[in-house]
Length: 242
Image (tube, rainbow, N blue to C red; front, side):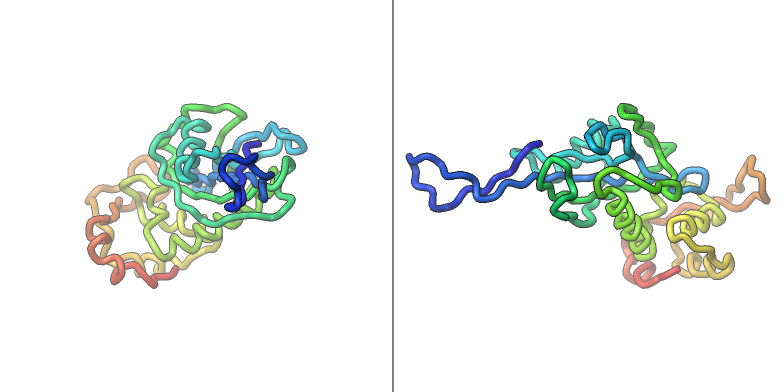
């Protein structure tokens, strides 16, 4: 395990350095959500560290002593998945004393949303694959707590920003949009009220195209007007709760 140390500022040049006053490991854990088959999913790998060998874990690692924490996040995502330029947002820090079997390690959780169909995993080591969030009952370390915290973060964020639309195709039906929000928030919504609220924001562009090859009545396909949202986001989105 890499170690970060803080040396006393009273050290006199030329004399032997004193023992470190603190020894602590700093790590990051990446929670990457996706949406597939109307299920919220997360990327997990098999841990190879005792006593959590063969338990599922998040994508994480120790931050190197000469490495910025954001750079560590990019490195970990690339090394574990083969994906580049994945936007990760910092959520919160976890620092229970005995959370890591090798010593004192404080970790910061980062979160991202990926369209699974548009981001093919290039590395599958340690059985890396997407898992249905609802089916995950146990994980290595305190990763279940971290996953739950990031899901709570996601539930709050999708009600304040159009973050969840990253999980859909560029063109989507209102049915797909509602199912996405219901899946993330974990609750059923009134169809008429949901659509009324979205249309009231005037941020959906009717493509004039209908769904094809669907097992239900085809619906219209829409696009989200990101340009208009960028100009009027406070007026059009903030405070809109579903």
